[in-house]
Structures are given as C-alpha cells and as structure tokens.
Length: 293
Image 1 (cartoon, helix red, strand yellow):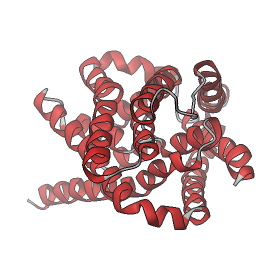
Image 2 (tube, rainbow, N blue to C red):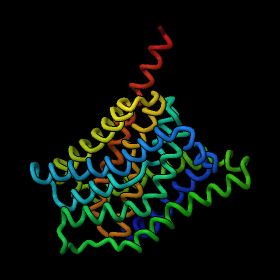
Image 3 (tube, rainbow, N blue to C red):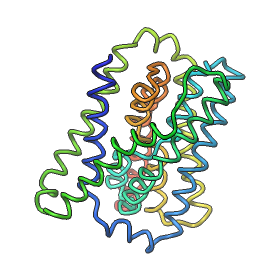
Image 4 (cartoon, rainbow, N blue to C red):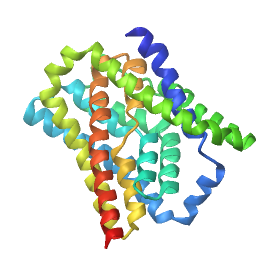
C-alpha cells in the first residue's frame, strides 16, 4: 500500500482541498462578521466538544468493550479533523446556511494545521502510553498538513480570484472528482486490509458510529439551545458530523506510517454518509411536508 499512502493519498487529499479552494473567496471569511454567534458556536463545537467526545467514546469503548488502544487513538484522530467538503454539499442540498458551512470548513481546516497534531499527540499519550513507538513530530506534521491542505486551498482561491469564470466552470467537476477520489481511497483501504477490518469491526464499527451520532446530536441541540436559525443549525450539524476522513487516513497512513490507526477514519468515512444521508432525508422530508401544507 506504499504507493497509495505515500503518493496517491497525499495527491488526492491535495486535490480535494484544491476543489474546496475553487469555491472560496475572501468575502466568505468576511461573512463571519455577519453571523459571529453561529460561527463561534460551530468553531467551539468542532475544535473543543468534538475532540472531547472523541476522548469520551474512546475511553468508554476501551475500558468497557475492549477497543484496542491503537483504534482509540484513531478515534481521537478523526475527532480532531475539520469538516470535509461533503458537509458543504449536504448543507446546500438540505437548504442550510451554505456560506456558514463553507466558512467553518475553511477556517477550521487552516486552524487544524496546529490543533490536529496537539490533539492527536494527547490521544497517543493517553491511550498508547508515553513510551509508544508511534510519535507525531509536531513541526513535521504541521508542515505536512499545511502543504497538503492549506496550500491547495490557497491555490484554488487564487485561481478563483484571477479567473472567476474558469473557476466556476471547473469547480463542479472537481467537486465530483474529489468525492469519487475519496470513495476510491476508502474502498482501497478496505480491500487492502479487509481481513483485519472484519476482525476489529465488532468494536470499531459501533464506536465510530457512536462518535458520529453523538457529534451530530450535540451540534444539533447546542444550536437549538442558543437559538440559531434552522439553516445555521443544519450547517453546524453537517459540519460536525461529516469529518475530513481523507485527512485522518492521510495522517495515520502517511505521517504516522501506521495503517491500523487509519481504520477508524475509514469506517467513519463510510458511516458518516449513512447518518448524514438520513439527516438530509429528514430535513428534506420536513421541508416537503411544510410545502404540502
């Protein structure tokens, strides 16, 4: 799997981030000032509550259900990742606040260059012990994530700024290709280690599903409690539930060189489409019911 993890995976992740950059303009970041409350609620949920839920789920499943420590650390990794481009798409389809979703994805993706290695290192020490052979070099990780995620986004934004019409023409194609590439990476990982995945799925499947459902529920109810609009609530719920699983797979398989640690990201990447799809169906059904009435 060396060619996949060392060459194709970084290129695919860079392309996915580039496709996101094509849809971004500087005004997207200025829009944060228009809805600071919603933005900062989404930011806190993504950067603070989601990792805390990751540690909670990992702790419970390791102590009560025998989840391997390496998989627990993998749960922390996926919880530390920002939302992916899929969250923007489902927010748009679900008539949510797409501008808020895009702003959160972009800003948190930039912040994750710093937050992700800090959170993952804490997860490694917590579940693997201080003497673990798996180490995440902070500066190497920061530079690696920056080059693979932030730089492609900036390049996409520059193209959008210099040639708006060209960006509008290729962005839908790039977004579809990005989704296809993501699915390709997930299934390639499954096929490569299907035997090991089957053996670990009894604890890994339920634990990743628990994390995914909890993050969406907490995001949904937190948005309701602080009286955000329905559109903002949908955006934040999708943003917290649909993580950048490709980034988690990249960090585990390429930067940490540990394919086993990427399994939670692989499983999460599959399950989030199911839960995200069900939530989208619920939202659309509710909207249709209102129209009929």
